[in-house]
Amino acid sequence: MTKAKVAVLISGRGSNMAALLYAAKNPTCPYEIALVASNNPDAPGLALAAAEGVPTFAHSHKGMKRAEFDSLIDLELRKAGAEYVALAGYMRLLSPEFVARWEGRMLNVHPSLLPRYKGLDTHQRAIDAGDSHGGCSIHIVTADLDDGPVLAQIEVAILPGDTADSLAARTLFAEHQLYPHVLADFVTRERSPDWLLDQVRQRALALPQSDEGLSHGMSSFGIEKGKKFAYFTQDHHGIGIIALLVKTSAPEEQAMLIDSDPDLYYRPAYLGPAGWIGIRLDLGQVDWDLVEDRLQRSWRTVAPRKLTALLDAADQF
Image (cartoon, rainbow, N blue to C red; front, side):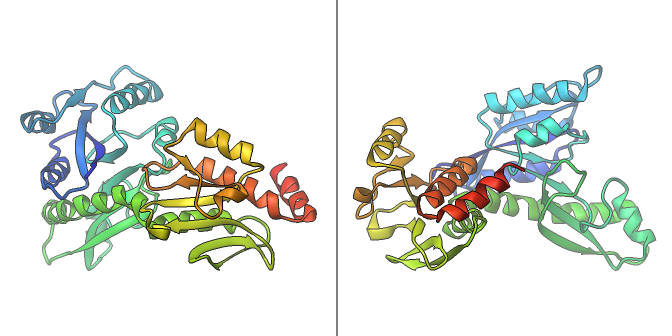
């Protein structure tokens, strides 16, 4: 099994980093920790990671502009071959540029039941509000603080006499249980046929007058009451791959694409002679901009001219 490479960013003790690191030691875990990096060279978590044989990087952010420091961290992440980033007690606001570079590939753990209590002092705020439960959330990082899509949560009961410290201590146990499981699910979702089909579906049905059906034993997308412009194939005819099939403009374009990247493109059986091409979706890190572009090109080959005019007009805005 090829494991996804995850970089973990910390600023202190790194207890959530440790939870991820030790989960990664399980042979069935789908990720490995490729790097632990910190803005605090004295962060205790760095020593633990190094002792466990994980590469580390530390550099103080003091005296550096935010974007400049984030570029330095980004360079180290890419040197380590990281595919995903897990924030684990990383006490730095991230620059928009850094968030954009890792869009959809960076998670954070937050000690509240989001969207409640974004930011700091979450446990005291929950107690002061008279809540019956606090908790923790794992969410995708976006440019807005603690505002990305929530992937999972665990509730933690607030007991009579709880202080912020006592509630925080119990919530930390929940964080350590939740984060490794959510990260494992997250790094494998891009190989899940259901997730991949949903991504294709969103893009295909966004095209004017498109609909979905079943054709040749595959999920298919076409113009309403018209021709097909895409198929989603999962181990169709036992070939063992997940792919998107789209039309090309001519056999010459089909051959050119296959020659340009034979790992990504292939000539599908049955539909191939008609100029269709297969785009592999099961290789990891799908280029969804490319998929969207090929879907639109394929749609144009079958859409009536009045529909393509609508799309051209929409593209101008």
